[in-house]
Structure formats: structure tokens, C-alpha cells
Image (cartoon, rainbow, N blue to C red; front, side):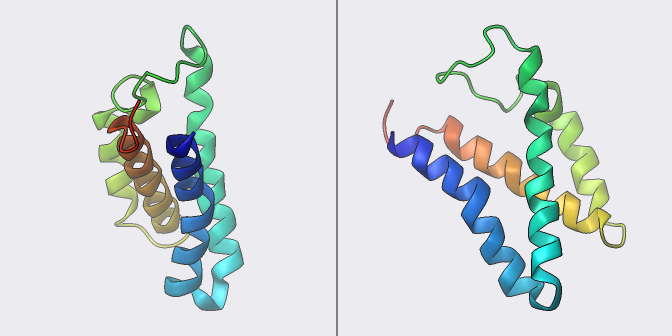
Length: 106
């Protein structure tokens, strides 16, 4: 339960803080772009079983692979909104990776 709360807090609340601190003049638009990066989880629909709480997303789902992450890093070298999407996607991957570590037990 604590893993789930931590995971979704990182996906939903922390990006709002990042948007507010680093993009204050346009924080709402940036936050909405960060939320749009959640669409990367659509690749979970191709997994069998669809949901497995013990499965690590990183390296398993196509948009959560190292190759995809290289593409997300490349986005950092473009102007907005691509750079914001790159930041959001990489933060999403970090969040999913931390979830894989099971910081709060099984």
C-alpha cells in the first residue's frame, strides 16, 4: 500500500512541484505536459497479465526500455515543449524504477 501511495505521489504531485519551481510563469501548461507523459503507460495494455504488482516496468514494457529512454534524453536537446516532455518522460522512468526497488517492502 505504501509503495502504491509513494509511486502515484511521484507521478502526480512531484511533477506539479517541479513545474511550479522551475517553470513558474507557465507552471500549469508544464504540469499538464508532465501529466501527458503518463500516456507512456499505454504500453502496459500489451502485457500479459495486464497488471502484475510484482513486475518491474523498466525493461519490460516497450516504452520503458533503455532504447526508449535514449529517445527521451534526445528530447532534452530540443526547445519547448519537447524538452518538457523529455523531462517528464525521464522523471516517469525514474519513478517507475524506484517502484521496482520496492523501497517499502513487498
